[in-house]
Structure formats: C-alpha cells, structure tokens
Amino acid sequence: ILIIKIMLKPTEIKILDFIKEYQQKNKQSPTYKEITKVLNKTSLANTRRYLLDLKENGYIDFISASNRSIIILKSHEND
Image 1 (cartoon, rainbow, N blue to C red):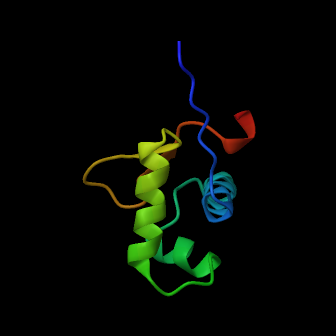
Image 2: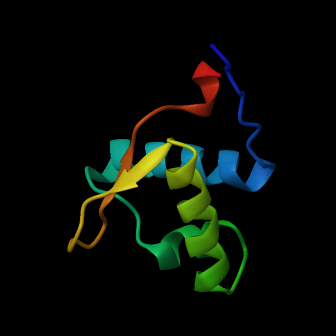
C-alpha cells in the first residue's frame, strides 16, 4: 500500500483553522468573501482555488446548491 502525505500550504492551514473556528462560533460555514477577508486578500477566485485544492485533497467538501456549504472532513492536525 502506497501512502502519500499531502503537505498543506500555510494559507490552506489558515483557511481550515478559520472555517473550524467560524463554524464552532456561528453554527454555519463562512462565505468565500469572509474567508478572503481573513486572508487579507481581495480575490475570491484565489480563495476558491484554495478551497478546491482542499477538497481535492480530502480536507473539505461542499453541500451542493447551498450557501455556506463547507464541511470539514478532516483536520490538518491529524496528519
């Protein structure tokens, strides 16, 4: 069995931590705009790219056709 460990970028770790804290505090997921703001960025496209990378690597998923739809599947702390 081949196991490949995914190394997350610091920005991806920051996003995962923010989503987790936001969900615990607000009982819902943050918007892309809120994530972009916490990263001190202006591009929603870059935020979306980070989120899609996290999804591809099995850290998050999205509920289709729903706002605030990010689900954390696993934490970077488990790696």
